[in-house]
Length: 453
Image (cartoon, rainbow, N blue to C red; front, top):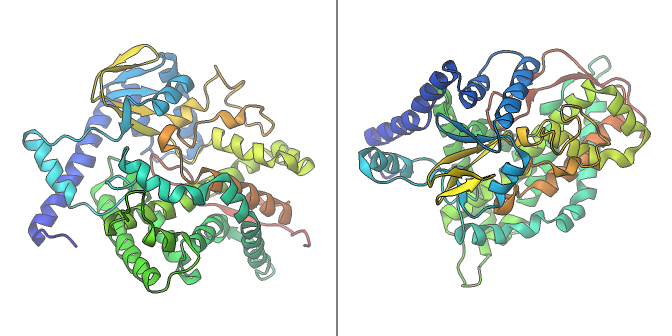
């Protein structure tokens, strides 16, 4: 709970919305009207048009940005859709996540004061997303072992069991009731069940965790309308309060789970995590453990529905599934972009970039770079270099849950299409309206006749 008086809390909240959303939205909308490519791309993410229409416009805008060279100067920083340039920035020590903190001048001091009262979330330190070494190194070291390729492979059998249990539930639906929303009935429940077990979350709490994730997902975006911003902050505060209670349960009754290890973990200097660090780290692990996979599963189902020839190829040769998952990640990534700030005067692809400049890295654009990917706008599960996508970011901020997301997508998609080979999607699918996280909130489908198991 904040230490500020109630009236000051409300004012601080309004300042956060004005500086982080209202003013940036006005600036990007104006830039879009004046022909700025980056502004047009941002404005497009708020378009009410069907996804297929916006996806085509989005692709053309990213192609135009890439054609400008390794990096394009926009009204509010730099933007790149070049695979080499994005990879260069992600691996460079000349850039950090988020903007450089500004605490000087009246506006800077006001922003710092209001930000201190913001709820614990993915864009507020000590979140792994916005911290840098040495803090980032310390936090990440405590959780990396759980998400290593070796550790994830040990979870594969359990993920396969969970997938089959969920498919059994779908198969037990009454006759004639084979229409289902795959996001709520499958894509969400598979990864959240796996990560809940890793963190010792009771089975009955899965749906609550999913609601928290859905409610907090827009916190990564800027330019939110006021009502949505308020709802996101409520979700973050509710999630933080729930995490505090869950951590206390774990303290009283520790078990064989990651959170029990984090509660008692000590670094080389004998330091443990503070309460805020523990909640921020556990919250991000929870989100990293299912948010990417929910979107990846939904995107993958939709892609295979739109490309029956690729679905047939997977049916004929199931060994293609691992590569198919990487092609899904390349073609329709769960995370559309990320951002960095220059910590010193530097360059990208030989183009000068001054200290403090913000750089938007279009991961989805880098994944469609024809300099690396032949016929980049074609979905091809046999693509030999599909794994060279940048959908999991890179460098020290490489996605913590990458190996887990890959494994769960491979298990979940293969099991679903093996059990329901005649699955078809209906009209009415709805994409998320978030700018950074990309996926479906509603994916209506007809399952068809199941294959006996």
